[in-house]
Image 1 (cartoon, one colour):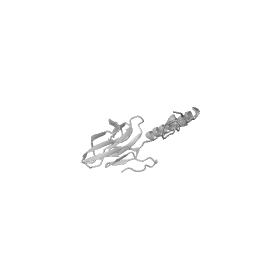
Image 2 (cartoon, one colour):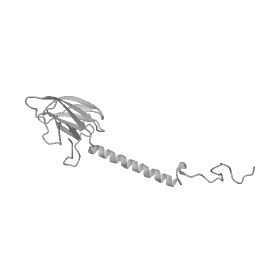
Image 3 (spheres, helix red, strand yellow):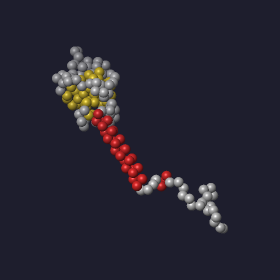
Image 4 (tube, rainbow, N blue to C red):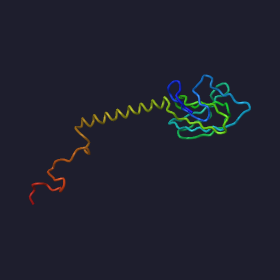
Length: 167
């Protein structure tokens, strides 16, 4: 499963396969004899991701992109290393080594630094809009018309009749 990484950010991928943080020599070390498996990648994040196979020398070979909320099944082999990065920033979202189970699921989706930053900026913009709206309401001299109480016209609220009027 996932958990807190050494840098305080939670691991982005959790799977039946062994997920790990980036290590300098992230590479595939196939089992002997070879054990084939299927990996099912679920992109639960809010960003498009690129999925790479890390060859036996650690070179990342791009295999496919995956849009948010989509799933892709990929044939692999035990000991093969996969790396998932944000398409826009190349930020690492998860890495894993395929195990010997026939079918293994990889969940991509914990908040990344990129997404956390986007959310902070959106919150700031919303706060600024609220402040501007409040300042505008004050300078226009009052509350929104729907918030103003009934105006004193001399009408009785119960009957709608004007008091003191002669028939």
